[in-house]
Length: 300
Image 1 (cartoon, rainbow, N blue to C red):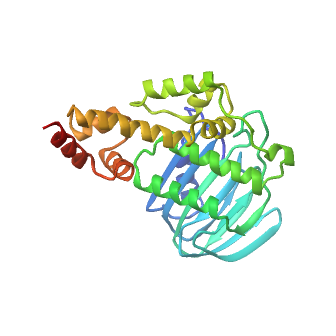
Image 2 (image 1 turned 45 degrees about the vertical axis):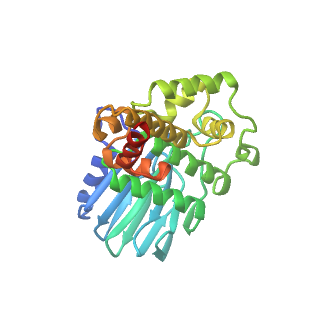
Image 3 (image 1 turned 60 degrees about the vertical axis):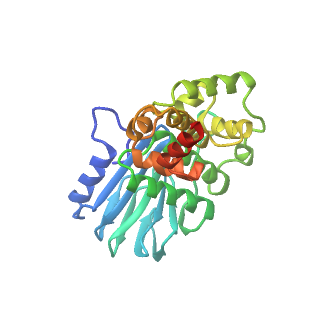
């Protein structure tokens, strides 16, 4: 079940649904999976109560509970843990560890698998075993990921990659077996040459599906180091910067009235008009239609 996937093998989503059926658990009301180079994120709505046995995963497994209260039994390496898992609590399991799970009510949750090479060649991520715990920073990231996966048909890969890297950094810092030296983030930012190449590339490709992987490759850095060094140099995270540039490009198009809102949203890289409208409203303080109306009045 938990294997890196080639194009010829069933997707993780297909494998998970098949596993549920094979082990007598009904299908969830909704299941969304996004796979990125550093791991994968899976959002489940309404998975029926049941029990399953899992092979060891190829990466660290974080399960974040969205249900109000989830009666859960976890068993791994000969040890069992029974709890009423509260909304916002999570459990963490090292890679390669087989496990058994049973739950007594319909389950809403976020599952994240983070591969050990998520940081490139700088260090390997191996986490400690934790049954039930809370972490406010990780909780905020998991909530955003769950919302994005359940509301968007095709969440933007750059966003998912960025959030996965933030989770991986927190796992490395607070819940890993890494040596202390491996937990120290890089102290510098991007060179002027690296920054110019990355920013030029973003500007030339705003209408496409930019990914953290390709931006890190342009800077010749690992994903983890690139994300940190970009923010230290530019002042905001890569996804936020791309979002700001897309909104600015959209404002230019709205001022000159080129195309419909649907055309503009797609031209600047948003996956839907609703995503464009919500992001534009948050950052500008007005809807695209309102902004266009204000711009026309100024030109009179």
